[in-house]
Image (cartoon, rainbow, N blue to C red):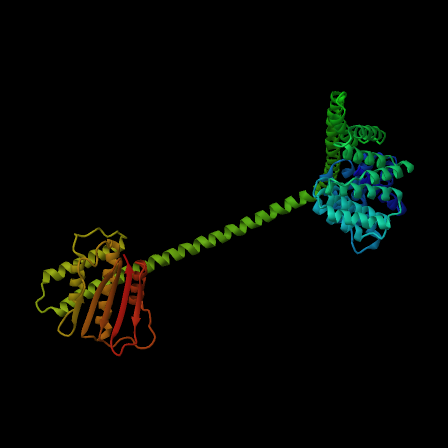
Length: 543
């Protein structure tokens, strides 16, 4: 019953295409010859071949025509997904602004609507039917498309819009087939929306029109609807119409309608129920097998076609690929040579940078350990009246050993354990003399608890660097170092009353080394140069 519209569409498309020049290639003409003989399988094969030729010639319009015909054949054979896929492909070849292509565009949208409807995707089916209407001025065809829209609404049980559409069609329908179809659909929709409505009169009227027109497909539809109506009301009438439907479906060679009629007869004819069931089962299996074969057949046709095109393209491009391979190898060789040279250059630069960094590291060690160590000894000698010669020699020997360790890149061994707070106090006391007073606050053992030896070494060198700079440059006579610890954060406050820092802060060797050490302990240093006199430095770092 639903096939009526797809068959109509195929014949309509066939007639339209015959009017257009079909002498473009022999496959195109051959396809229509098979289509006219209702040999759709062969027509499909030749439409596929013709399409490839049109694509090669950049004739998109006729390539699209071929695809539309293939899509309609697929849908008519029950391959709804295949029909959808091919129609979508066809739409890419059409120009919707070219009126000469409107008939094919219309047919393509209609096929999308039919395929979607059969897949129960009614929302998209309605959308595609309305798109089809946009591309046709043919009133009979518009009425058929509207009828299909009404059917889609009916399948969704949206009876009111369906009834409204059917009633609008009846006002313009002049073709007996269309008129009888719409009467049937309107009557059954009213009955489905209202079980108390009696559609018998309208259904019989439609059947009478169809018999007068010798419309076997239409008669088949009428008997189907009448059988449904009488199914629970009058079993004799239902049985009569079901048998008539089976008879007509055989004449129409419609396996789907035969299966539907057999299902009705299984429920109605108790005496022959087993017979009808066996026939139905066999037919259903055959129908499914045939449908699957059709799907596979069309898929294989397209697969073989694509495979052949691929093989031809491969043969034509074989020499080009060989040239391309040679060029690729040459390019690869050039890239390898360039990469190797750049790598050698990079390695050379890395080695030079490594040497430079080692020199900087060594310079820093010499400054921190040797220079500051010697300066500390000099300060002791300056600040002490009674100098212990052996003590000074021991300290100088210690500095000497440290300098040798640097030259051999030896790792400092852990010295005898000494309380770090006392070590700091001794260091600060070293710089105290008759003209410079040093003061310490908060330097107890709790301050330095859990500070690792590496961190202690950095802090020691930072404080010594501050004191050395004070001695060399500040002219201060009062130096205060205050130590604070809040949770796991240590803060060192350095203050002197010297000349301070005038102008912009310049990072010379000693200051650069101090900043570097503070960064090593993940700390920060703040210089307060805005005080009236002297210098104030705040250093903080986490443990």
